[in-house]
Image (cartoon, rainbow, N blue to C red; front, side, top):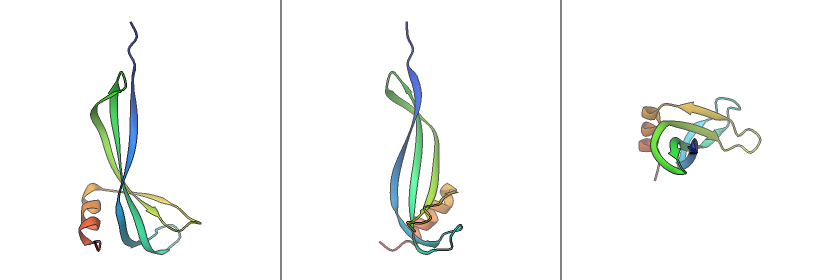
Amino acid sequence: MFLIFGLRTRSERLGVVPGACRVCDHSGGMLLVRETTRFSLFFVPLFRVRTKHALYCTNPLCGARTEIGAGEARRLLAAAPH
């Protein structure tokens, strides 16, 4: 009998928030992304293992990724213009 299991990470774009990149100091929009990792058994996702939030620099020459906490992500989304 074979047991097929694994982890899969999916990224979900939450929106563009104002800010400055910590790497290149580019002011403007930062892309806010939620990355969710799920445990799968026989290719069926069963439960969430971890959730991370990250900001991506929109500068095409930089593209740096900065991890942030869930509370900071909620604060940034609430303050972002809709």
